[in-house]
Length: 373
Ligand SMILES: CC1(C)O[C@H]2[C@@H](O1)[C@@]1(COC(C)(C)O1)O[C@@H]2CNc1nc2cc3nc(N)[nH]c(=O)c3cc2[nH]1
Ligand SMILES: [Zn+2]
Image 1: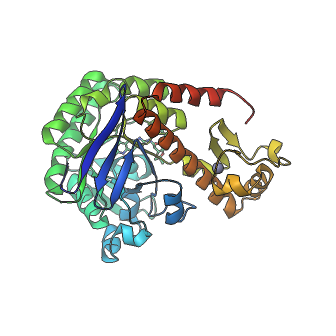
Image 2: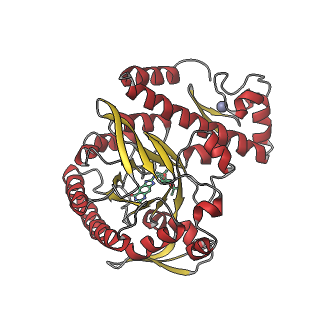
Image 3: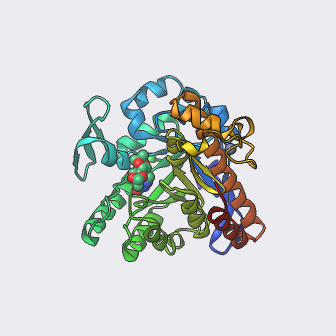
């Protein structure tokens, strides 16, 4: 790991691991869930509230911040931590995935990607070198290589061609990142759902050498079964002593299955995005607070949850403010969802640490199957 970074494995249970990533801005307990703060904010949350849910690290996006307010402006104002008032670790995605999923008029070449902003149509370019420069300007603690994530389904030929481009871009990212004590660079494995291509990608990345390794190219619509079939072998292609980060995942049962298969870090817009649409995630399963059945229900969302929404409000109130599209609805449900996701991560960390993950997972699934939610 880079100077100032260290990953200590504390326990394993089957393929699952629990440990700590030490960084200059604080420790990250793994397995870790990273709330997504795309444009310098975890939507509907104050930074102190994000911390209160149990988050050790959050995610920012090169693509969004380079367009607005620009990385140069954030650097001029003291960097992303100062700008958004979050002084613990930040991981930034490198922009390639967001360009392909959000920008228009994209032109992909060996050099990089030229595209038009989805914000104002202005012309931009991202390359491994420019992505490293932007992430350095932002001051993020964990920098992601610039890669290309092919949309699935795709032929093996298309996936292979894209993966090999990403591996050349990984080398260029490494070269451009240089030696930055206190900052880590993570490589991103590609290869779709093809085991040989995944292994080829892992060999290429470990040959270059990174402080951590992401499993990319998943959570792009392939479905849980296909994702788990890749995770049954892909983490094992990566160095045991380095963090393994599964990008863009996911629903609670995706998270549990990924941790069982050796993943240490995850991020997903789900808890925050669904919180803004009236959807709550609970130990018993998903609850849609738009549903009229809640309008007279005096019970809390989850009587065993200690978050502000569950401690102080009824389902009837949550239903009312969701239906009225009140701002507090997004605040309360986002807080609850992030609190639940972090509580799930703590449960996983404790279970792995005590060698009882199988029982924890069985209980997790049993709770979701049973009872009225
Ligand atoms: C764009 C947005 C907001 O991010 C979510 C969500 O939409 C959406 C869109 O389609 C679904 C699947 C429904 O979820 O996919 C995102 C979650 N999956 C995901 N995020 C990723 C980020 C990644 N970053 C890099 N650099 N490389 C990758 O290979 C990569 C793969 C990823 N997979
Ligand atoms: Zn709650």
